[in-house]
Length: 200
Image (cartoon, rainbow, N blue to C red; front, side, top):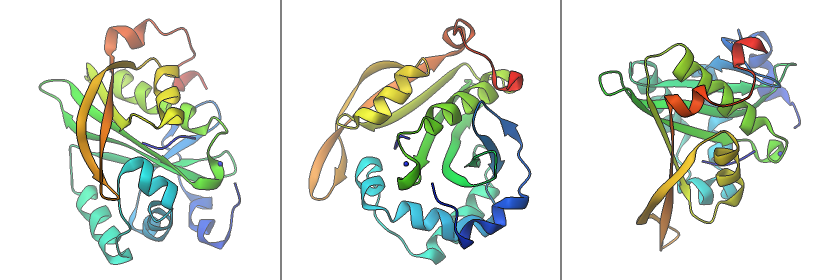
């Protein structure tokens, strides 16, 4: 998970006509489609994101194949994070949805130039409201490197609780990294004193 830095360029043109499926205070969420492969590929190739998320650059073809697989995955919902002018600033997903147990994982990545502006917090709040307001989920989890202070701040700011550390759980750049594990339960979300996404 990377936190919240924006310039629109020609690669963003496809998002201008994108239908926003879910809104928040400063951002909207639109379902990811095949046409977003180049944009997502460029974000995942950013060295800061690669380090913070523990990923490595893959080919554009692999990204297209991944999006195609995800489109067919009923246990996963992927969204572009859009500004009001439809500029894409990030990607957020609700993955591993288990309706029987009421659990799912949150994934968040922002474009390098859009970090530190609060968009990650608003996108996270919006997805949490979707998960608890429209789906019968009870527990959401998220993981990030223990040293990723911005992501940890976004999670705690949205009500997530740091419930432990997965020691040496990630291999990146030849080193083992610990992962901080966060969770948010439905009763905790119900007790949050903030407007819901549908009030935006």
